[in-house]
Image (tube, rainbow, N blue to C red; front, side, top):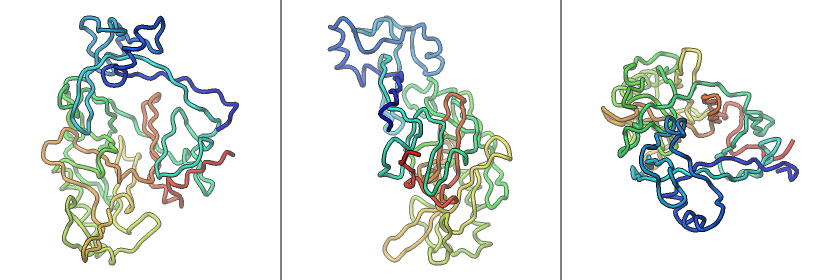
Length: 333
């Protein structure tokens, strides 16, 4: 990081109930505070975050402050908190590669449109294809306060293709209804992509048909997967096992997020079994979200959340370019 680069002052929205309860008690006795409450007339916040701003003023420093009802989408637990705005400083650099060495195969860059440099001399920002980010109208993934606006971002998946052949799906399940049900979102809390049952069956049937044409040998499946193949019968390529490709068709037929074997298949080695299993899981007949793209499908893909332009950028597998997320170039140009 360049020592001459000024810090970037960034606003941070916090909840006093969960994060700042102790700090609130301390700072309220002082003349000034490090943060300020977000008032009930913050209509934009109410529209975007689902804050309940019609109640009486809150206690402590949070006079006349918006209340919010957050829920952890992993545990399903939630509660009420008061929304406070704070500021913190982030180090900046002219090139994102200047932030230091990468020790894990995951990268998070804030407020940067690129370049994203990977060895050998690849700017992955030039590989990105974009599709709109869609904000769900209701909190379909919140059990307790389901009537509030969803905190998640969705993408407009319209169909799958397997080896270039369209998979027919129930379009009603792909849309988000007025209750926030349906649609497609990304989630790193899910290890594998989960699909509503009819979507799962349509995709796996198409995959089996194409894999049979390649003479792949099916073996007994291993939970939670329903389709596995003998690993020693599948050739390896730079993008993983040579299996049928799966395309996510987004918005229109020209925007495709291609999933190769490295992201569609999961290697299982146990006892005397060595298999590649299709890394998609059945989530039942009536899940809240019809398709949740999981972490395995995102590995070694560069994904950019451009909230200002309300779009998602994706690269497809970096393995196609002979690099991985672990090869992020931390050296300044």
